Each structure stands twice: as structure tokens, then as C-alpha cells.
Length: 510
Length: 115
Image (cartoon, rainbow over all chains, first blue to last red):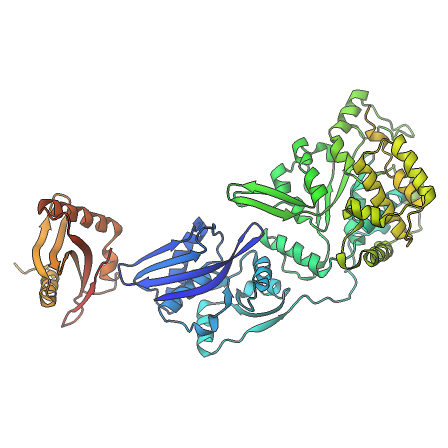
């Protein structure tokens, strides 16, 4: 007899609806799985057989043909176990199939019939919901993750036997509520900006970056607090909105990194790959690509500490995502696009010894001039061009370090950032764009320079030999600075501050 | 000598097919590579039959012991039979017949077109 069950498959971040068809016919006992199954899917034959036998039911001693339709796309993953098992039980009339109409089934089986959690449930749910499926049967292990999606009738299963008995006596679906947005302020952060003494310009730069989602490059001698400041950046960023957090969670779910803690879904991702990271680990890779670091920092921060120590090739691949906000990876299994809209925060020393340009009080650079030049040149011009703000982190003075008056806390800074973001949102309406993502035409529309500011821009453009891209980035940064002042036009002082963050003597190419 | 259980099973199967109207062409057709238990003719089809007898199902069903390797052997022997008897354009089919010798009367299960 023929039975049919609906499930989904995940390739990259792309979700495809899959029909699992099972036909049991008389003949010698054999199980054939067709429809381009991957090795893990082929193995599910043995898991399904053992799970059914160990759940007091009978695996048919007949010829069983399993088809995963559409048969032209590759099927990966272990979540086909439960749908295959259910289709087998339906085709041998060992389970009641009526309640399973239009129900998506996802789950992995262990040999004793226990249903185990799988990766990628969230993106699959979102896509299947968009296709109009209202009911899903999911592993209990994925309960928390599934609860994030709103308005789906879910049944959470722990054991195959339990599912079959419930199907027989009438199955009860549970309606998911969607993510609870509790207004509780972010849990007290372990790392707070008040711990950073001095470094006012660095803190100011951090605030601008947080308000407009810009890129930042910090230059300074060792021990000046660059890393310390970067680690505190997530604390002053606003929480993720619902849609943003869904996007982020879908990426993490596909990568198998989604944590059980729902609360952490609202904090922006902060990724700090080590400088030995390879190009593939940043973009995402594998035969069927999995998201890499730049996608994992989508809507969050990608912190690249010791930037010149990164492999050159690795850094150059950042160029395109920095402009486009997504990365396209081509592999034999197909071409996949992952979102990658991140804030790049870089930190570096000015030279190999770390003190070039920061010599004071006996501490001075002992590098040869060519060494200094070569160090700075490890980061290519095009990449530098994509940085919005440059900031120096000076050595901290003894007085600053021992002062008793406490610096501003992250919470205070965050409030200001939120205000600036709210001001932006008002201007852009529902579009939910941030200053850093404005297109040239939007810049013309939204970034009005006051007459004095326009004059200053003209001089600066010539004097600083800005590229067209640098000009646009300049405009966006000054827009953010004006937003922090709650000013609709960009005044001279706003532009001046933006320009001041652009001057980077360490990267003047000769 | 007392016939073996397998032989008794084959006799039982032969009786079953005769009752059904199959023409028995050959019993235990042997070749260098293997043997076919029954070669029969039914309507327009040449049917090769493998008989499997079991006294209990403790170690699996009889049909489970017809492994892919065994199926391949039967196919090869069938080809030899066809060649030997010049029956090239005849339709053919492979059946498995199970004889359960657990209790009297023996139960017979016929799987037509098994592989």
C-alpha cells in the first residue's frame, strides 16, 4: 500500500518541501530509498527498522520503497527518520493516518524509538509556515526553538510509540505563542563600559558605531584597551527586533549552534574569530555550505583582533559582503547565499613593535621605517576604504587608571544609542534600515548638508582625496552623528567630527 | 534413508504448484554454479522457483534467507537453463515459496515475482 507524509529538507539556508512516499509491496524483504539520499539519509533505513521493531510494532517483511520527492534535489540530514517511519507505519496500517493530513513531520530516531532533536528546525518551520502548513510534529528536544514561531499547531514527540498511540485516540496539538517580548532590561552585563578609564574618543567612536551600525578600525599600542572596548560593544547595542532575531536564529539553527536559552536570542551576535581563521571559515563552506563567521555575525559584530595578522586572502574576501550584506558561496552541491550584514570592528597595532606614532615618555618605536610601512600595507587599500571610522587608542595615563570617579556605564550609553536609533527609524519609516546601509540615492534623499557643512565637504573631498565610496561613507557617518544630536540636517560640527574620525595618519600611503 | 526436511518441503511445494496448474518442467536443475529447486511453466511464463523451508521463525523468516547473492546465482542458473533449452523469447519470472513446518498441516506462502 502507498502512504505519503510531508517533511522538509534544508540545504544551506534554503528550505524545500519534501514528500515522503512509501510503498510496501509483496516480494522479498528489502528497503530501497530513492530520491538522491545522502549517506546519513540512507542509514535511516536501519534506524527506522530498529526503532519500529523496538516500539512493539512490526517492520514489514516486504519490499519497501521509499521515495523522497522531488527526487532531483539532494537530501541531507537525519530528520527524515521520523517521517519515513510514520509513512511505513501508515502504509502497513499500523497507525491512524487521518490526523497527519497536511502535517509536517520532522525528527531523528534512535534505535529504541526515542525521537531526538535535529538541527535547522527553525528555518524549516518558518518556510513551511509561509507555504501554508499549520500543523507540525516535532521532537521534544526542539520545543524551545519551535516556540519562537508564532501560530503553529505543534505536537512535540518524545517516543515513536507515544505518537502512534496518540494518533489512535486523537492527537492534541499545542499552539505556539511566538517569542515572548519581555520588557526586562538586558541582564546585567559582565563587561561594562564603566570599567574603561579614559579613552574618551574611543568610547565616542564606539557610540557612533553602535548608533549607525558602522565599521570601525582601532589603532593603538599594546595594552591600550582596544580589545577591552570591542568586547563591551554588544552591551550598548540595542536588542534584536523580532524579524532580525528570527533571521539570526535561522542561521544559527542551520549551523547547529542554536542555544537552548531563548533569552540570548535577543542579544546581538558577537563573533571574534582568531586571526588564524581561514577564508572558508569566514564565508562558510563545506560540500553543502554551512554559514561561516560573517554570517554568524549577521545583525551583530564581527570583531577582528590583530587585523594585520590575518591571512591576506582571508581579509580580502570580506570586501564583497561588506558592500552587499550577503555572501554567495558556490560549491558542487549548488550556489548558496547567506545573509552577512555585520559591523566590522578591527583592532591593530600601528607597527610590529606596537608603538609607532605613539612614542611618549621613553616608550618609543624601534621598528625600521620599511617594517612600519609593510605592517600597515598588510591591509589592502580597498578594505581600508570600506572602514567608516578610524580611531586611535592612546596609552592610558596613570591618573586615568587610578581615578575614583567612575566612567559612564554601558546602560547610559545604550539609552543614548537607542534614542538615536529611534530617531533614524522615524525618518526611514517601516523600512528598518540603518544609516550604514543607505544606498547612494537614499543618501541624496536623507543626508542634507547645511551650507557651511557643504563647503567643508567640498574642501575635504579635495584635500583628503576621498574616493566616491569614502564620500558616501562619510555622509553616512555624519548622518549618524547628526542623529545622535537629534538633528534633521547635518551641520558643520557633525561633518567635522566624522572627518576627524576619517583622518588616519597610520594609513597614509606614500 | 529418511528424506531431509528441505526435501520434504520441496515435495510439498511441488504438490502445491501442480494443484495450481503449473507444469513442472524440471526438479533440481543443477549446473556448475548452482541449482534451481523447481522450473515450471504457467500460462505463457517460465517460472523459476526457490523453495525455502523452516521449522521455526526464531532465526528469521524463510524469505529472508534468499539473499541478494543467492538471487544472483539463481538468475545465472536460469540463464543457463534457457540457453540449454533454446527458450530465448519466453517470458520469465522468479518466485519464492515458503514452507512453514511448525505444525501440521504445513503452511505455504507463495511470493510471485519475488525478484
